[in-house]
Structures are given as C-alpha cells and as structure tokens.
Image 1 (cartoon, rainbow, N blue to C red):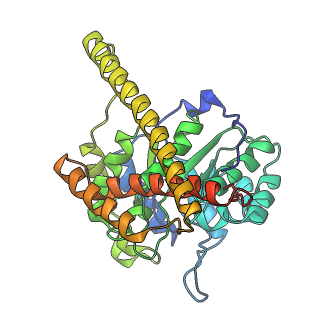
Image 2 (cartoon, rainbow, N blue to C red):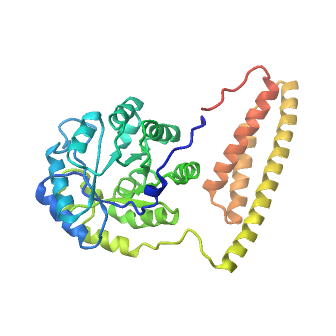
Length: 368
C-alpha cells in the first residue's frame, strides 16, 4: 500500500466521545421522525440523530428518500429534543441544502467513498466550513481508498473528521450482510489513533439478532461510538426494514453493553501486563528470525530447482504442508483459518524468494 500523510484531526473535538448515531434509515414523514426521536430521548440524553434524506439505490423506482423536505423534519427534531442531527450527502448540492438547514454532522456513504471525483466535489463544497464529516468505508475492502477519502477532506481544511465502519460487500458474507473485516479497521485505527471510529452495526449485521454481538465487539476494540438504525415501526419502514430496531430495543441493547476501560491504575495489572508483553515481543522476534531462516532454505531449494529445470510450485508438497499444519494447529488450540492464512503468506513469500532466484531479471511488481 502507498504511504499516507498523517491526518490533522481536531483532538479537542475528537475527545468529545461517544459519537452515537441513532435514528431511522430514512426520513419518511414528520410524524415518524418525531416519534422515533421521542423513543430515543426516553433512554438517551445527547445522541446524534441520524436519518437518510437522499437514499442511493441500486435500481430506479426504489424509495430514494424524501429529499429536502426531510431536512425540515430533522431541524424540528433538533428543536424539540436538542439532539445533534446528521445525514448522508453524495454531492455538493446536498451539502448546500444541509448547511442552510443547520444539519450538525455529515457523513459520506460507502457508495460515494469509492468515487474520488464525488468525494472531491463534496470536499470542495466544505472549504472553510467548520462541520464534522464522517466517512464510511468503501463497499469493497480497499483501505487505501478509505484513507484517500479522509485525506481529501483534510486537505480542504476539515479537521473534525471521523470514520464509520459499516462492513464490506462480499458475495458470501453469511451470517452478516457485510463482512466486518475487523483487521482492516484495526489497521486504520493503528495508523490514525486520533481519528474517531464509529461502528455501523446495522449495515454489518443486516438483522437485529446479530447486533448485540457486533456492538460489543466494537466496544471491546475501543471504538468511539455506534451507528444503529432505529425506527418507531421497523416492519413498515420504506428502506432496510429488516435491520432496523425500535427505540425500546435500542435502549435495552445499549444498557447491556459492557464498557471496558482503555487502561487502569492497578499496578499489579500493569506490571503483569508488561511481563507478558515482553514475552510476546521475544517470541515475535524469534518468529521473524525463524522465518528469515526458512526463506534462506527456500532460496537454496530455488537454486536446485533452477539447475534441474523444475517448476517453482509443487502443489502436492504444498497441500501436504497445509493439511499437516492445520491438524497440528488444531491440536495446539489454533483455528484452521488462522493457520491457513499464516501459511499462505509464508508460502507466497517463499514463491517470491524462489522466483527471484530462478528469474533474476523478472521483478514482480510491488503492490501499491
């Protein structure tokens, strides 16, 4: 992956956690908006009220949102309940309408994040505007594209900047609607520890039954808030009816989440943690040294293959290694998925090393 510049985040704003977005997938009527807000207000003092005003749909003739009239309903929610309000924008025209109606926070949807032209248009419309912007991950698992969108807003001066993890589309994503791919989110959080990260549990799960598990996972990863689609009568919702929950279910869900501290002043804990981390660091260093030794052996094998005009890939040998290692891993308490993923990376590097021996003039292109 190409290197990226550090993001300039307004740390004072970022510290005003949590960023919890609750509200319907779509604004459908003034009554629906106000009743849903009333239900949310029964359990929460200062959430961010979310509602889709413009809905990007895969096919025409689907419900594509009520349009600008919905902004007036958002404004009424803000006036009656004191909530901050938020909605998705997909072009400069949307931005203009939102700013006129006093929307507090904007977010960029997954379909928009994939288009640098669209993101740049929205960013240009926000030059000189002090409004928070949250960027959802792109539909497909492209971390660089997600970071690029964040950078575009940062470059025009948006410093109140956050990210929303809504999962990634994949043909086989069961049991989720969109695969969480937590490892990508963890990588982004590692690169930008000051960037607020919100988990859109509704779009990841696609069904209410999975939401408690995913929401707790987000909390355990120290994310800064949740986005939960909440509708006063989900069964008759005009969009994403299957994944929305009532305000009463939301209140119960949040009350059962366990919040764990990032650290503690307990000296015994800190001392023992450092000892265990030291042991892990030692093992990691030893593992890297062993991998380096393994690659040296792979190079020697590559020389023998070159001199005897034998192909690099030996499928039967590789399958035997994989099967044996997965069984050994299971006996040691390691999942087959972990062992297979680890060995696939090792094998890929071994192939690269042998290829450099057998074809020294043919460099494999680097990934960007």
